[in-house]
Image 1 (cartoon, rainbow, N blue to C red):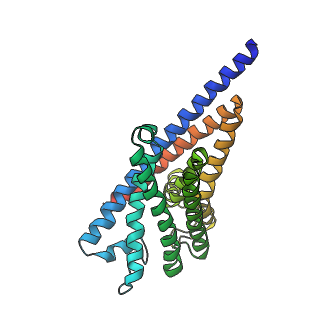
Image 2 (image 1 turned 30 degrees about the horizontal axis):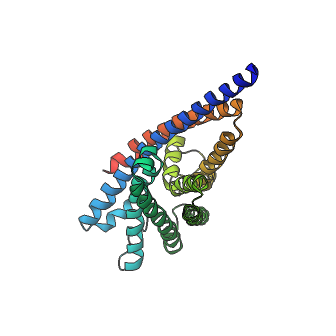
Length: 272
């Protein structure tokens, strides 16, 4: 009896630790994403208001093409929706908002799902019409990311209508990670450069190489794999697995923080 109680108590404690560490990662990630949203709004928004759309091409190659009205509008919509998604998305996971502001949670969720679906579609359109900086492999990886965003958005909407709220929450979490693939790419790249102090595994001029190929798919595959492992460990409720996952997530949180710092100082602040 005492042994069973002690085992259950240990599992409860390890589960609390796992939740706390995952919340710690979430807070660090959201801060980093909001810094990115501020950068996108300031850089691209200021250039648009000044009528200097060519400035977009300093960061987003072929982002603006003279005379290509439809293509330019798609890029503008994609950037606008990116800011809406980055700012509004994390609010869906705050318990107090979900329980005390249910109407806001529902409407913000609808906007989030619709905008992520459109962002996924517009991202694929941009790749097909303009191509990725990283070449045809980048075209494939980014397009697949867009497809996943649309699939996850549909499944998140469907499970909400079916009132399968636990399943719905998990699809929204998958959507949250997939839609932030671009952000993961940037902090992953800057973390890599921060560690090595120079380009390793790719050519800085052509932006081609095995590491860029790995990161092109890893920007969403790795976060999604970690999330699925987190779900499995949380559901199994085995103390040792939960503690191991907590330690892994803590290390991942530190790496995320360093990547955010490196991206902020090396990519975003210098352009503002």
